Image 1 (cartoon, chains in turn green, purple):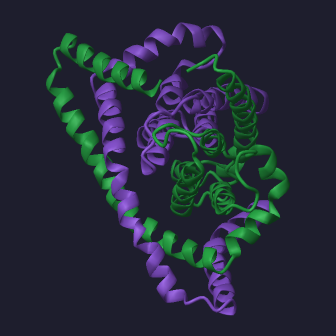
Image 2 (image 1 turned 135 degrees about the vertical axis):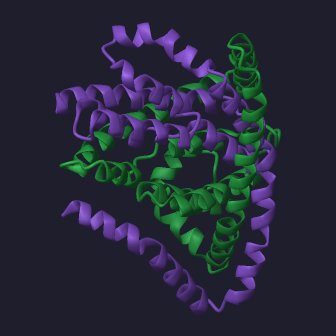
Image 3 (image 1 turned 90 degrees about the horizontal axis):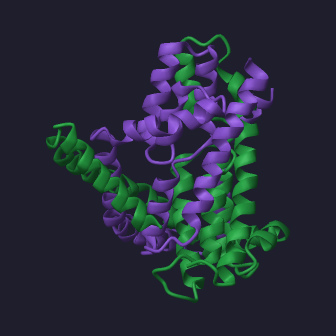
Length: 198
Length: 178
């Protein structure tokens, strides 16, 4: 799936640039994209090291397990393949909480820690996404944000009379998205299990 | 009132988490300093592991965008969305949003500046920006960090969430702001 999208984006990009007589844009864009990716990854080292350190302390102290136990009823329903007091659950809950509060710098490391734990539970091919990973990412990408801080910032700068009036509509739209993500994940999981799709 | 409480929670969340974890670890007699370093050691390898995945994704998105192929794609889809009553102005935002966070934010800022933050387009763009996510980026980063290259159905469920967020934004803005 992702292979098809990747090839399609790259090839149509090159063909369109050639037709438009703008072929040199391809080279610049490719290098720019690569540079951006590396810059991002390097910036990630700092927050990853920090949160991995903190999470290790929390794990050794037994806190991640306690947290995972507290949210058992909900996570048991969403992640039937993950043991209920597994550290992955603690990281998933912390990632989603950070997302809700709009704390991007904490959400990403927590999410990557959760993925690392989920990969330990991945019984099939380690290059292939597990069911729990797919559910986690469906939740993560559609997660409710209570304060869309960046947008509110732009609105204030543009001189809005009521910069926060979009909070209600945002929460409504993102709730719909989250609901659909969970339902679609369930349906696709069932289809894949029966082997109808590859 | 509610907004103030949420802002407070966001401000206090991380210091509070740090405090509670450290105190708890001391009570449980964990060697906090050594354990922290042990954990932090993996920070470098985790971040570096994502590089090939991120490079691949951003090269393709960057080429797709700057070649003008994305504009063509927007033009091709616009008859369908026009038929559904979605303003043509926000369509590029809807298509950019799952691909690139920075690109989408640029379009949102541009729309708010051009049409005004309190216009219908301005409010719709703000709602769209806040209610959808950069799905491709998140998938690439998260799967990349553990070396997964076959995403199975995660792309479909992620994109269906984005599409729902887009449609729900248009509907709710039409109901509330028109």
